[in-house]
Amino acid sequence: MTDLPDGIQRREFDGRTRLATRGEPVYGEPTDGEWRCWDAGRSKLGAMLESGMEVDLTGGEGVLYLGAASGTTVSHVADFAGPTYAVEFAPRPMGDLLDVAEARHNLFPLLKDARKPEAYSHVVESNLEVLVQDVATRGQASVAVDNARFLADDGQLLLAIKARSEDVTADPETVFDSVCEELTEAYEIIDRQRLEPSHDDHLGVVARKR
Image (cartoon, rainbow, N blue to C red; front, side):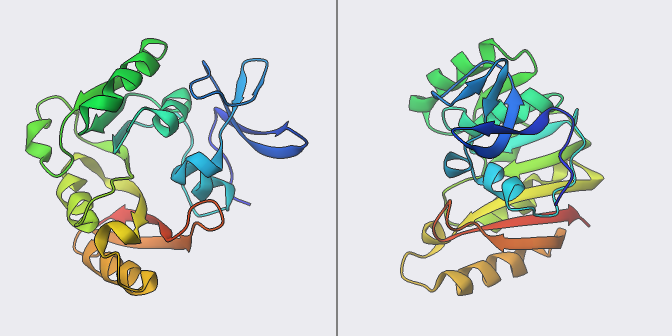
């Protein structure tokens, strides 16, 4: 089983062992004192960690998170990481994301388009350790490749590929193979794994910047 970084534990909630981080509750998740359940059914990164993928995190990393939405997953990331830049394109969830950031001084919400990294390159620091991507758009590999500029030389990509965002009619495995092939322009793929039953037609990918 993959070692968990400092700031993440396996704790019992509702009679079963689940991931947890220490922080303010965000989405009605179960709590155990100051620890809150990280619901893998609502978080692709949580599902990657829970399934034992070869994610290399120790805690305290600088993170760029693409596709932060209302802050469900990025709130857990900020609980154990260092500076965490949260990019979200849609104005509607940004209000929720700002509320999440109020209790997390290391979380920096950015109302920007992940397909245009030049729009936030003056804000996001370089040489970050981790890029987390959960963007429901066509061209998910291009987004990851274009944002590799923010990673340190040995930086890590944690990507959730949504097959239906690329091609709603194609076989998901065909889509996943195509996206992973395009990723190799900038990354070496370390691990890939389907995220069922937590998330249908999604592939988790762990990769290192080349």
